[in-house]
Length: 351
Ligand SMILES: [Zn+2]
Image (cartoon, rainbow, N blue to C red; front, side, top):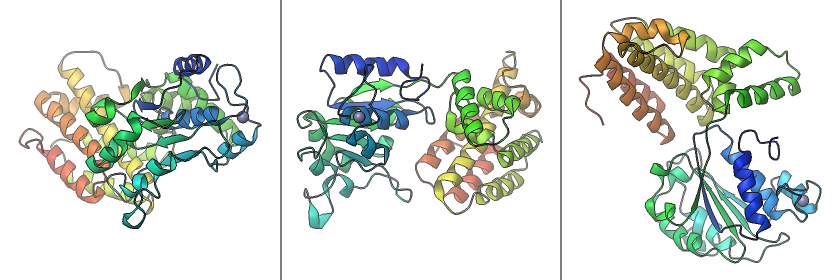
């Protein structure tokens, strides 16, 4: 059974249902786990249950009360959602405490102190919690430590390591695991059949298996352009010595084809780098004499497996580059730097 339609996190739902039944919903939660597994969807569903006038057994929102209707329309006056704007590298301070002209007369820290308009409590959801500036985090500390009566604050990040210790220590940490392959496949099948398109069961199986528990990644892997570029990249990576300029040019063209919006561009670059990572990891496995886990990468991996140090260094550089995508780096510069390092990964020093 999937709690409120969210696959794979029933144990966490049970935890919240039990806390609610005992009247012990906490004030500050920090959700961590890989991207694309449903943390944001879970946070929004939880926010809905928290404002619902008649929560059902299992702490499921009734879906029919005025609060549920407003929550579904993203217009509930007591649910406050803050996230990092696409063009910023951190969540701006003014989203928490208002701009210079409205200090503590606007922003999340001010709004959460107000009396709830209709719901039993105020709920704040802070997405992109990996991107707190020190300044913004400091402003939030007091709110996290002593949330107003009944208020709940849910922070959504990816890993504990990325959280400032001051924030981490003030929240109850809830860990989300990658989705199981069959859960990913089930969601993809549901999406394909509601989308009215033909369901290619084999393609769905393949995408679910390759997505490593990330629904976002699985959706992208089902995309025809992405699949075509993946094959091309495997060819390029199978060539030694690596032609970095070519990898760079073709990767940039693939990213540019996503249009001008930052999120789809970043998503495309992320799949490119994740595909490369699969190759380097497979190469490291081959070099260590371990059995293959990703047959589609085997040929490209063979080109690297005779150079185990290079593969290991390439894994590190690629993880750094993936991190930089999330930190809003200039993608063109990033691609050039990444491919240049791949040409000679052992010679490059880390950052
Ligand atoms: Zn309701």
